[in-house]
Length: 396
Image (cartoon, rainbow, N blue to C red; front, side):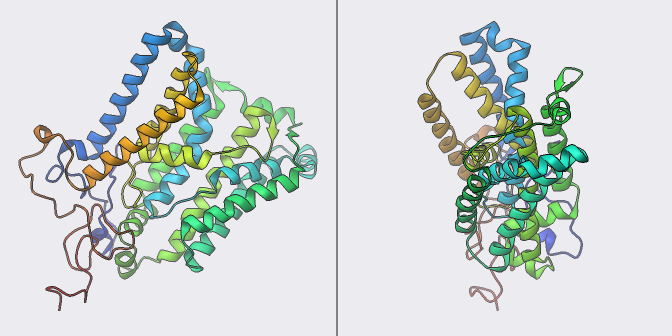
Protein backbone atom coordinates (compact mmCIF):
# COMPACT_ATOMS: atom_id res chain seq x y z
CA UNK A 1 0.00 0.00 0.00
CA UNK A 2 2.55 2.44 -1.12
CA UNK A 3 0.68 3.87 -3.98
CA UNK A 4 1.29 7.03 -5.85
CA UNK A 5 0.89 10.14 -3.85
CA UNK A 6 1.35 13.22 -5.91
CA UNK A 7 -1.02 14.83 -8.27
CA UNK A 8 0.15 15.63 -11.70
CA UNK A 9 -2.67 17.59 -13.11
CA UNK A 10 -0.89 17.29 -16.35
CA UNK A 11 -2.16 13.76 -16.29
CA UNK A 12 -5.59 15.08 -15.81
CA UNK A 13 -5.07 17.29 -18.79
CA UNK A 14 -5.01 14.22 -20.95
CA UNK A 15 -8.20 12.58 -21.98
CA UNK A 16 -7.85 9.64 -19.66
CA UNK A 17 -6.73 9.90 -16.11
CA UNK A 18 -3.56 7.89 -16.03
CA UNK A 19 -1.74 6.91 -12.94
CA UNK A 20 -0.81 9.75 -10.72
CA UNK A 21 2.87 10.44 -11.00
CA UNK A 22 5.33 11.35 -8.37
CA UNK A 23 6.16 14.71 -9.57
CA UNK A 24 6.81 16.30 -6.30
CA UNK A 25 8.94 13.70 -4.83
CA UNK A 26 10.44 11.59 -7.52
CA UNK A 27 14.01 10.45 -7.68
CA UNK A 28 14.89 13.20 -10.11
CA UNK A 29 13.69 15.90 -7.78
CA UNK A 30 13.98 15.97 -4.04
CA UNK A 31 15.49 12.51 -3.89
CA UNK A 32 14.48 9.27 -2.34
CA UNK A 33 13.40 10.81 0.94
CA UNK A 34 10.93 13.09 -0.85
CA UNK A 35 9.16 10.18 -2.53
CA UNK A 36 6.42 8.02 -1.02
CA UNK A 37 8.89 5.35 0.05
CA UNK A 38 11.04 7.87 1.87
CA UNK A 39 8.10 9.58 3.54
CA UNK A 40 6.59 6.31 4.73
CA UNK A 41 10.01 5.08 5.82
CA UNK A 42 10.38 8.19 7.94
CA UNK A 43 7.01 7.49 9.56
CA UNK A 44 7.99 3.88 10.27
CA UNK A 45 11.24 5.07 11.85
CA UNK A 46 9.35 7.65 13.93
CA UNK A 47 6.88 5.03 15.16
CA UNK A 48 9.74 2.61 15.91
CA UNK A 49 11.52 5.29 17.96
CA UNK A 50 8.35 5.89 19.97
CA UNK A 51 8.03 2.16 20.61
CA UNK A 52 11.65 1.97 21.78
CA UNK A 53 11.03 4.91 24.11
CA UNK A 54 7.92 3.17 25.41
CA UNK A 55 9.83 -0.06 26.03
CA UNK A 56 12.61 1.77 27.84
CA UNK A 57 10.39 3.92 30.02
CA UNK A 58 7.41 1.63 30.61
CA UNK A 59 8.87 -1.81 29.99
CA UNK A 60 6.44 -4.70 30.02
CA UNK A 61 3.47 -2.44 30.55
CA UNK A 62 4.02 -0.96 27.09
CA UNK A 63 4.81 -4.28 25.40
CA UNK A 64 1.78 -6.01 26.89
CA UNK A 65 -0.61 -7.31 24.25
CA UNK A 66 -3.57 -5.70 25.97
CA UNK A 67 -1.80 -2.34 25.87
CA UNK A 68 -1.12 -2.73 22.15
CA UNK A 69 -4.77 -3.59 21.54
CA UNK A 70 -5.79 -0.57 23.61
CA UNK A 71 -3.65 1.68 21.39
CA UNK A 72 -5.24 0.23 18.28
CA UNK A 73 -8.76 0.40 19.71
CA UNK A 74 -8.36 4.06 20.66
CA UNK A 75 -6.77 4.86 17.31
CA UNK A 76 -9.55 3.20 15.34
CA UNK A 77 -12.21 5.91 15.73
CA UNK A 78 -10.01 8.89 14.92
CA UNK A 79 -8.36 6.74 12.25
CA UNK A 80 -11.63 6.39 10.34
CA UNK A 81 -12.27 10.14 10.60
CA UNK A 82 -8.74 10.81 9.35
CA UNK A 83 -9.33 8.75 6.21
CA UNK A 84 -12.14 11.08 5.15
CA UNK A 85 -10.06 14.11 6.15
CA UNK A 86 -7.23 12.84 3.93
CA UNK A 87 -9.46 12.93 0.85
CA UNK A 88 -10.70 16.44 1.66
CA UNK A 89 -7.20 17.85 2.22
CA UNK A 90 -5.74 16.18 -0.88
CA UNK A 91 -8.63 17.75 -2.78
CA UNK A 92 -7.51 21.17 -1.60
CA UNK A 93 -10.07 21.63 1.18
CA UNK A 94 -10.37 21.36 4.93
CA UNK A 95 -13.12 20.04 7.17
CA UNK A 96 -13.30 21.45 10.69
CA UNK A 97 -16.73 19.94 11.36
CA UNK A 98 -15.76 16.27 11.65
CA UNK A 99 -15.83 16.15 15.46
CA UNK A 100 -19.23 17.81 15.62
CA UNK A 101 -20.58 15.48 12.93
CA UNK A 102 -19.47 12.49 14.99
CA UNK A 103 -21.37 13.92 17.96
CA UNK A 104 -24.49 14.72 15.93
CA UNK A 105 -24.51 11.30 14.27
CA UNK A 106 -24.10 9.50 17.60
CA UNK A 107 -26.89 11.49 19.22
CA UNK A 108 -29.29 11.06 16.30
CA UNK A 109 -28.62 7.32 16.14
CA UNK A 110 -29.34 6.88 19.85
CA UNK A 111 -32.56 8.86 20.19
CA UNK A 112 -35.50 6.97 21.64
CA UNK A 113 -37.26 6.94 18.28
CA UNK A 114 -34.25 5.49 16.45
CA UNK A 115 -33.61 2.88 19.13
CA UNK A 116 -37.29 1.92 19.10
CA UNK A 117 -37.08 1.36 15.35
CA UNK A 118 -33.90 -0.63 15.85
CA UNK A 119 -35.61 -2.79 18.46
CA UNK A 120 -38.53 -3.48 16.13
CA UNK A 121 -36.39 -4.15 13.07
CA UNK A 122 -32.63 -4.54 13.54
CA UNK A 123 -29.74 -2.60 15.06
CA UNK A 124 -28.56 -1.88 11.54
CA UNK A 125 -31.10 0.97 11.65
CA UNK A 126 -28.83 2.79 14.11
CA UNK A 127 -25.84 2.27 11.84
CA UNK A 128 -27.74 3.52 8.81
CA UNK A 129 -29.01 6.55 10.74
CA UNK A 130 -25.54 7.57 11.90
CA UNK A 131 -24.04 7.25 8.42
CA UNK A 132 -26.99 9.04 6.79
CA UNK A 133 -26.74 11.96 9.22
CA UNK A 134 -23.00 12.26 8.59
CA UNK A 135 -23.47 12.07 4.83
CA UNK A 136 -26.28 14.63 4.95
CA UNK A 137 -24.19 17.11 6.91
CA UNK A 138 -21.29 16.50 4.54
CA UNK A 139 -23.64 17.18 1.64
CA UNK A 140 -24.54 20.54 3.16
CA UNK A 141 -20.84 21.33 3.57
CA UNK A 142 -20.19 20.37 -0.03
CA UNK A 143 -23.04 22.44 -1.45
CA UNK A 144 -22.05 25.53 0.51
CA UNK A 145 -18.37 25.21 -0.43
CA UNK A 146 -18.61 23.99 -4.03
CA UNK A 147 -21.67 25.90 -5.25
CA UNK A 148 -21.96 28.65 -2.66
CA UNK A 149 -18.25 29.40 -3.14
CA UNK A 150 -17.78 29.90 0.61
CA UNK A 151 -14.28 29.31 1.94
CA UNK A 152 -14.03 25.76 3.29
CA UNK A 153 -12.55 26.95 6.57
CA UNK A 154 -15.52 29.23 7.28
CA UNK A 155 -18.19 26.84 5.98
CA UNK A 156 -17.01 23.87 8.02
CA UNK A 157 -16.41 26.07 11.07
CA UNK A 158 -20.05 27.15 10.85
CA UNK A 159 -21.08 23.50 10.51
CA UNK A 160 -18.96 22.63 13.55
CA UNK A 161 -20.87 25.11 15.70
CA UNK A 162 -24.27 24.30 14.23
CA UNK A 163 -23.92 20.52 14.39
CA UNK A 164 -22.67 20.60 17.96
CA UNK A 165 -25.58 22.85 18.93
CA UNK A 166 -28.11 20.63 17.17
CA UNK A 167 -26.67 17.60 18.94
CA UNK A 168 -27.14 19.35 22.30
CA UNK A 169 -30.74 20.19 21.43
CA UNK A 170 -31.53 16.63 20.36
CA UNK A 171 -29.91 15.13 23.44
CA UNK A 172 -31.17 17.86 25.76
CA UNK A 173 -27.60 18.01 27.04
CA UNK A 174 -27.90 14.46 28.34
CA UNK A 175 -25.98 11.32 27.55
CA UNK A 176 -28.10 8.78 25.72
CA UNK A 177 -27.50 5.14 26.58
CA UNK A 178 -27.40 2.52 23.85
CA UNK A 179 -29.96 -0.10 24.83
CA UNK A 180 -29.55 -2.62 22.04
CA UNK A 181 -27.41 -5.44 23.44
CA UNK A 182 -26.93 -7.06 20.03
CA UNK A 183 -25.44 -3.83 18.69
CA UNK A 184 -23.01 -3.62 21.59
CA UNK A 185 -22.02 -7.27 21.50
CA UNK A 186 -21.32 -7.11 17.76
CA UNK A 187 -19.12 -4.03 17.79
CA UNK A 188 -17.39 -4.74 21.09
CA UNK A 189 -16.44 -8.25 20.05
CA UNK A 190 -13.33 -9.45 18.28
CA UNK A 191 -12.22 -11.74 15.48
CA UNK A 192 -9.25 -13.96 16.34
CA UNK A 193 -8.37 -11.60 19.16
CA UNK A 194 -8.50 -8.48 17.00
CA UNK A 195 -11.16 -5.99 18.17
CA UNK A 196 -13.99 -5.37 15.72
CA UNK A 197 -13.32 -1.63 15.85
CA UNK A 198 -9.75 -2.20 14.63
CA UNK A 199 -11.02 -4.42 11.83
CA UNK A 200 -13.46 -1.69 10.76
CA UNK A 201 -10.61 0.83 10.71
CA UNK A 202 -8.51 -1.54 8.61
CA UNK A 203 -11.36 -2.10 6.15
CA UNK A 204 -12.08 1.63 5.84
CA UNK A 205 -8.37 2.32 5.30
CA UNK A 206 -8.15 -0.38 2.65
CA UNK A 207 -11.24 0.94 0.88
CA UNK A 208 -9.83 4.47 1.06
CA UNK A 209 -6.50 3.33 -0.40
CA UNK A 210 -8.22 1.60 -3.31
CA UNK A 211 -10.49 4.58 -3.91
CA UNK A 212 -7.59 7.03 -3.85
CA UNK A 213 -5.02 5.07 -5.84
CA UNK A 214 -6.94 2.75 -8.10
CA UNK A 215 -9.98 4.71 -9.27
CA UNK A 216 -10.79 7.72 -11.41
CA UNK A 217 -12.27 9.35 -8.32
CA UNK A 218 -8.88 9.28 -6.63
CA UNK A 219 -7.05 10.68 -9.65
CA UNK A 220 -9.59 13.44 -9.92
CA UNK A 221 -9.02 14.20 -6.23
CA UNK A 222 -5.29 14.67 -6.81
CA UNK A 223 -5.99 16.77 -9.89
CA UNK A 224 -8.50 19.06 -8.18
CA UNK A 225 -6.22 19.53 -5.19
CA UNK A 226 -3.18 20.17 -7.40
CA UNK A 227 -4.82 22.78 -9.57
CA UNK A 228 -8.56 23.20 -9.68
CA UNK A 229 -8.53 25.39 -12.78
CA UNK A 230 -6.38 22.95 -14.76
CA UNK A 231 -8.63 20.13 -13.62
CA UNK A 232 -11.66 22.04 -14.86
CA UNK A 233 -10.02 22.66 -18.22
CA UNK A 234 -9.25 18.93 -18.41
CA UNK A 235 -12.95 18.19 -18.20
CA UNK A 236 -13.27 17.36 -14.52
CA UNK A 237 -16.44 18.69 -12.90
CA UNK A 238 -14.63 20.30 -10.00
CA UNK A 239 -17.69 21.49 -8.09
CA UNK A 240 -19.40 18.11 -8.17
CA UNK A 241 -16.18 16.36 -7.18
CA UNK A 242 -15.65 18.77 -4.28
CA UNK A 243 -19.18 18.07 -3.08
CA UNK A 244 -18.48 14.33 -3.18
CA UNK A 245 -15.32 14.77 -1.10
CA UNK A 246 -17.26 16.40 1.73
CA UNK A 247 -19.99 13.77 1.55
CA UNK A 248 -17.27 11.13 1.83
CA UNK A 249 -15.88 12.90 4.88
CA UNK A 250 -19.36 12.95 6.40
CA UNK A 251 -19.78 9.23 5.79
CA UNK A 252 -16.55 8.45 7.62
CA UNK A 253 -17.82 10.61 10.49
CA UNK A 254 -20.99 8.52 10.58
CA UNK A 255 -18.95 5.31 10.71
CA UNK A 256 -16.80 6.79 13.48
CA UNK A 257 -19.97 7.71 15.38
CA UNK A 258 -21.10 4.08 15.28
CA UNK A 259 -17.70 3.00 16.57
CA UNK A 260 -17.66 5.49 19.43
CA UNK A 261 -21.25 4.51 20.33
CA UNK A 262 -20.09 0.92 20.63
CA UNK A 263 -16.96 1.83 22.59
CA UNK A 264 -18.70 4.10 25.10
CA UNK A 265 -22.23 2.56 24.92
CA UNK A 266 -23.55 6.10 24.64
CA UNK A 267 -24.49 8.83 22.22
CA UNK A 268 -23.47 12.28 23.38
CA UNK A 269 -23.06 15.81 22.10
CA UNK A 270 -19.59 15.78 23.66
CA UNK A 271 -18.36 12.94 21.48
CA UNK A 272 -15.69 13.87 18.97
CA UNK A 273 -14.46 16.95 20.79
CA UNK A 274 -11.27 18.22 19.08
CA UNK A 275 -11.38 15.34 16.61
CA UNK A 276 -10.94 17.88 13.82
CA UNK A 277 -7.54 18.87 15.19
CA UNK A 278 -6.47 15.30 15.83
CA UNK A 279 -7.47 14.24 12.33
CA UNK A 280 -5.75 17.18 10.64
CA UNK A 281 -2.62 16.59 12.70
CA UNK A 282 -2.54 12.89 11.81
CA UNK A 283 -3.05 13.66 8.12
CA UNK A 284 -0.28 16.28 8.13
CA UNK A 285 2.10 14.01 10.02
CA UNK A 286 1.30 11.34 7.44
CA UNK A 287 2.72 13.50 4.67
CA UNK A 288 -0.41 14.98 3.11
CA UNK A 289 0.16 18.54 1.98
CA UNK A 290 -2.22 21.07 3.50
CA UNK A 291 -2.25 22.90 0.17
CA UNK A 292 -3.65 19.78 -1.49
CA UNK A 293 -2.54 17.65 -4.40
CA UNK A 294 -0.48 15.14 -2.48
CA UNK A 295 -1.04 12.60 0.25
CA UNK A 296 -1.36 8.94 1.13
CA UNK A 297 -3.74 6.78 3.10
CA UNK A 298 -0.79 4.76 4.40
CA UNK A 299 0.81 7.91 5.74
CA UNK A 300 -2.39 8.89 7.50
CA UNK A 301 -2.63 5.49 9.17
CA UNK A 302 0.94 5.87 10.43
CA UNK A 303 0.18 9.42 11.56
CA UNK A 304 -2.73 8.18 13.68
CA UNK A 305 -0.61 5.38 15.15
CA UNK A 306 2.21 7.78 15.99
CA UNK A 307 -0.08 10.15 17.86
CA UNK A 308 -1.89 7.37 19.72
CA UNK A 309 1.39 5.66 20.66
CA UNK A 310 2.78 8.98 21.86
CA UNK A 311 -0.26 9.50 24.11
CA UNK A 312 0.06 5.96 25.43
CA UNK A 313 3.72 6.46 26.32
CA UNK A 314 2.88 9.71 28.09
CA UNK A 315 0.06 8.05 30.01
CA UNK A 316 2.17 5.08 31.08
CA UNK A 317 4.82 7.46 32.39
CA UNK A 318 2.25 9.55 34.28
CA UNK A 319 3.05 12.65 32.28
CA UNK A 320 0.44 15.35 32.17
CA UNK A 321 -1.87 16.03 29.26
CA UNK A 322 -0.33 19.50 29.09
CA UNK A 323 3.10 18.06 28.34
CA UNK A 324 1.47 15.80 25.79
CA UNK A 325 -0.16 18.80 24.10
CA UNK A 326 3.19 20.60 23.93
CA UNK A 327 4.86 17.57 22.38
CA UNK A 328 2.04 17.19 19.88
CA UNK A 329 2.36 20.82 18.84
CA UNK A 330 6.11 20.51 18.36
CA UNK A 331 5.66 17.40 16.22
CA UNK A 332 3.08 19.13 14.02
CA UNK A 333 5.36 22.14 13.47
CA UNK A 334 8.32 19.91 12.61
CA UNK A 335 6.18 17.88 10.22
CA UNK A 336 4.93 20.96 8.40
CA UNK A 337 8.45 22.38 8.15
CA UNK A 338 9.65 19.09 6.68
CA UNK A 339 6.74 19.13 4.23
CA UNK A 340 7.69 22.60 3.07
CA UNK A 341 11.26 21.49 2.43
CA UNK A 342 10.08 18.42 0.55
CA UNK A 343 7.65 20.44 -1.55
CA UNK A 344 10.45 22.84 -2.44
CA UNK A 345 12.80 20.00 -3.34
CA UNK A 346 15.06 20.59 -0.34
CA UNK A 347 14.69 17.37 1.58
CA UNK A 348 17.72 18.02 3.73
CA UNK A 349 19.33 14.69 2.91
CA UNK A 350 21.66 15.51 0.00
CA UNK A 351 23.46 12.17 0.16
CA UNK A 352 20.17 10.41 -0.56
CA UNK A 353 19.34 12.46 -3.59
CA UNK A 354 19.66 11.19 -7.09
CA UNK A 355 22.20 12.49 -9.55
CA UNK A 356 19.79 15.04 -10.95
CA UNK A 357 19.55 17.52 -8.12
CA UNK A 358 18.11 20.36 -10.08
CA UNK A 359 14.58 21.31 -9.24
CA UNK A 360 12.13 18.93 -10.75
CA UNK A 361 9.71 20.18 -13.35
CA UNK A 362 7.10 18.65 -11.12
CA UNK A 363 8.13 20.62 -8.07
CA UNK A 364 6.11 23.22 -6.40
CA UNK A 365 4.68 25.98 -7.64
CA UNK A 366 2.45 27.78 -9.93
CA UNK A 367 1.70 31.37 -9.48
CA UNK A 368 -1.97 31.97 -9.44
CA UNK A 369 -2.90 28.42 -8.61
CA UNK A 370 -5.94 28.15 -6.36
CA UNK A 371 -3.95 26.89 -3.43
CA UNK A 372 -1.04 29.20 -4.04
CA UNK A 373 1.35 26.37 -4.79
CA UNK A 374 1.23 23.09 -6.52
CA UNK A 375 3.20 20.03 -5.72
CA UNK A 376 3.58 17.52 -8.42
CA UNK A 377 2.71 19.84 -11.24
CA UNK A 378 4.54 20.29 -14.49
CA UNK A 379 6.02 23.27 -16.20
CA UNK A 380 3.75 22.91 -19.19
CA UNK A 381 1.75 26.07 -19.75
CA UNK A 382 -1.69 25.57 -18.38
CA UNK A 383 -0.63 22.59 -16.29
CA UNK A 384 -0.42 22.76 -12.50
CA UNK A 385 3.17 23.81 -12.28
CA UNK A 386 3.19 25.96 -15.37
CA UNK A 387 2.06 29.38 -16.41
CA UNK A 388 -1.57 30.01 -16.92
CA UNK A 389 -2.67 30.58 -20.48
CA UNK A 390 -2.69 34.29 -21.04
CA UNK A 391 -0.76 34.94 -17.85
CA UNK A 392 1.93 36.88 -19.62
CA UNK A 393 5.61 36.01 -20.04
CA UNK A 394 6.18 33.78 -23.00
CA UNK A 395 2.59 32.83 -23.17
CA UNK A 396 0.95 34.31 -26.21
